[in-house]
Length: 379
Image 1 (cartoon, rainbow, N blue to C red):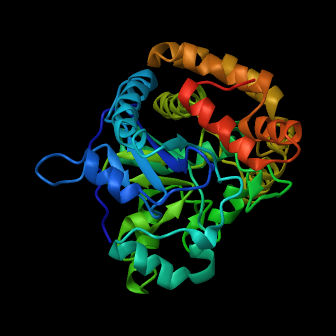
Image 2 (tube, rainbow, N blue to C red):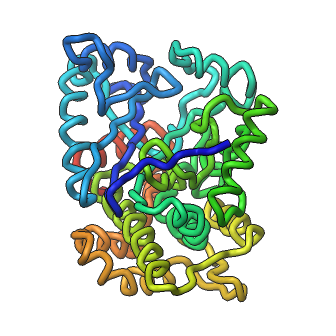
């Protein structure tokens, strides 16, 4: 099976941000996505190009256009969020983002009325119905198809860094799971989800897709739900590692890190230098460590099994990527990664709020709503 890879501008960037719709008074989820989507739709009845339907009726997804900088993509997202709020404010509905809702019941949620979602639920049953989770996807343009799989493999060396920075799902169904990111380990239960296979050549991906299509595992490429996957129709690498990110400032910082890493590896390939190729068993271990321990994770850094605390390696990484960030126009945003290192990730703030409020998770939701409104963490 031949899979064409669209032409895209090198290191163009786009961001997809899944947002929860929560009741202004109770903090519980509201099933009003269809109403919101209808209200913001163009007059011709088509779907808004940058505000999209998702699996559950408690969720909308805002999508930036193709941008040159993460700041530009962020401004696009802000415009779409402002439009959504013209509808949700009247409904007494707030926007919130985290990897999971702290206390909502998965079995109370309604699935969007769309054939592909009904098919997914029918096939995946109990695990599919539990997908009450939210994430962020960052697309980065790659101009040469032959670079895609090597860069994807190299990005796995920094999977744990991205997961730790974005970890925001310590609570599930009203309980503290003990994990920084419960979402990361839940989502991988779906067929074709989780870590990508260790492919270095595009032809290997084509053979894999051919096998899955012929055996009925998938019908279309998008049903491959890897944490890192090529997006042939856009000509990008889609980085799907991150939990839902609560604030615009953190979103842009983590997106800038993603953007810089892809561009850095692309430049290294152009220069004829090798790029990281972490063993699959190390990548799998790093995923678990970062999901469990978040910013306290000790990660395996390279093929030689050297290890270090994720926060220490992030400080070095930001310094190494500074020239790349300057080229991409995201120096300030990349620098914000150090703010997360210094002040902590969302899962840490959520636990502090819960502790300060006698374990009340509605207070955690209120803090996440406030952070979304402010666009920055409440420290």
